[in-house]
Length: 239
Ligand code: ADP
Ligand code: MG
Image (cartoon, rainbow, N blue to C red):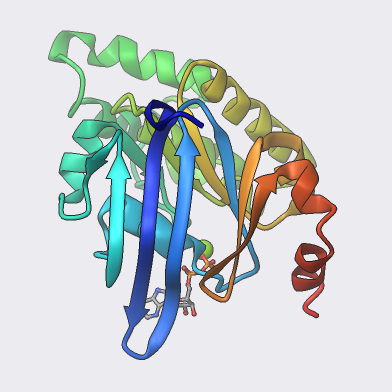
């Protein structure tokens, strides 16, 4: 991997909450253009890592580099401006506003006034929810709400998109559509780092993976390497 090809790098990153080591001495490199999965059982530290990449949490140790630049001390908003965006694990949509209004809130920060409407339409089309633009978000299915959130995360035209459990709680059909959407975004040139703990979904989608367990890096490699790693299989079965 050439140095130029690395878009995101975590160097010896740790996060302690009081005495709890949620994340411990993590090194991760994500290549530009990658579709990379952070996987591991519940409580492994995955969401905490995302929050440190986004600048929501400050690492206790280590550094975060984006595009060769040390961003460890930058605020979230400045990271957004550099091209990092996130869909969090917890919902971030406004249920009592319409789909259009939600998307407009996200888009208007990054798009000239005259172009807001067409940019919202473009994103709703991409997200397969254009017909629902006047619907209250509370009336959307769980999957549709997730897609809206992904759309809102795209409003800043990110280079790196962080998706925390994008298919959690979805049925098979919505899961497949989510996988297709993520693949499409990646093909459009967005580097994607996503979190999931469902091996079947990961297999469908990811190129490279990093496996976390109890806050530490447990394994890394291609999906094929990970799925045939007996130790990885064992932590999933709780051994
Ligand atoms: P994952 O996303 O892999 O399920 P998290 O990153 O959410 O795991 O959590 C990792 C560990 O850190 C867990 O033990 C969790 O309880 C703890 N943790 C996460 N956020 C906080 C917080 N804000 N304060 C205290 N403990 C936290
Ligand atoms: Mg999590």
